[in-house]
Length: 540
Image: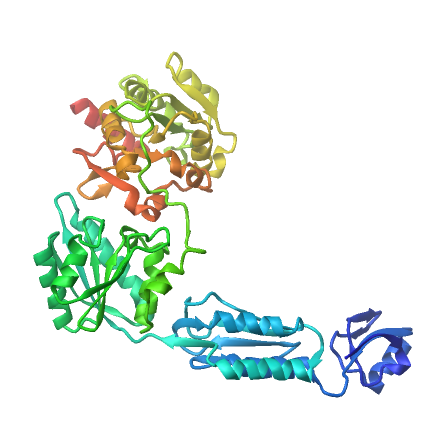
């Protein structure tokens, strides 16, 4: 291919390398120049133009891209029409993308003019999703390079294909130990059902049995006899060894353990076995979470009927560190007393009280004391240290109401933008030595020091109790203890919303503390609610 600047009159039959704009005249890059274009260029005052001209034997960019794309694609893949040297490949159906990595690398080394890019191998894809693209960089490539690429692809085919989902009947066994809430199992089943739904798979049956070999083996046997094509076991206790309860149960039904452990985090404690021709997965604890983890990498391949060998598992290390696991227990610092961690209190008292009318609810009184002072006194009387009060609306009056109390005052000038700004101001002021913060609302006058201390006592990072919430008959209330590991998330909240959605995101880190009464649910937002709380306190 010849390339360079030529007089406009000599550009007939060549390809414009760059777009040209001259007044109202536009010549787009890639346009083949004919007599009309030459006349227009001359009329526009263009004297010289950079062009490309194909040599005999060259293959145009679109033709080369189309030929190579057709050569690399296989089952379940649709090739779109090539344009501007690019030809895109799409999934014809939902499935798992299978790619011959070595062949893609080899194609990209043939000639710098030829490039092939794909999604990650073994990625679950949906119908119509773009999975790869072939791009020819110049306007043409030599016939030799194009022929070499096509021949190499045909020789090793298939290079890119979509393996359709084949496994649709899944059985689930949950083992049970004292202290494992039925709600955890219910949530795990719900998350698992959602996880396998894109593959067209369903949970056909589930069993809940004690965490011991005989009961578990019987449950696995029942599910296999019921027609399960895949059995997933969620243990109440993590698998610690190939001789542990779950692998022993798989072997007890005549199965074998193919591999235990994987270099993907989260997901290390994954077990893959097989019994009666069907796969049996010992799920790691992270599989109870909807977030991507090593369990997904293996599960989706199995649902597509793809083998997952020991070599496949051990080859997952590069790229296997998926995220920092904020819920993972951390070693206890030597200077932390056994009686508990250091927890600060953040009392939010910045709101405008719009539903109270002309009255600032922070200053409304019960028994001669303002709501903000009642809440602050209880926080001060608790184990929380220090107590940080975030002010905003009528700052000076709120500060007067708190006079004499050993609290740290933090003003939020952006309080009118919503609760999120006050939460950010308060968390930002928590001292570095604090391991957590209990976020309290100043319009909840029935939350006392005893409740605050109960929640703080339940905070236990070594056992994964990183978020502590009070629970009344299944309803979650306030205040809430948050580990420092979530401070970044708390400070990212915007608008007039609290942190409730984060509790859902990190459900595995949440501990509920059952409490009596309605103190953790009752706030003062209206004159009517103020009167009701007054009456209840007076009756007490």
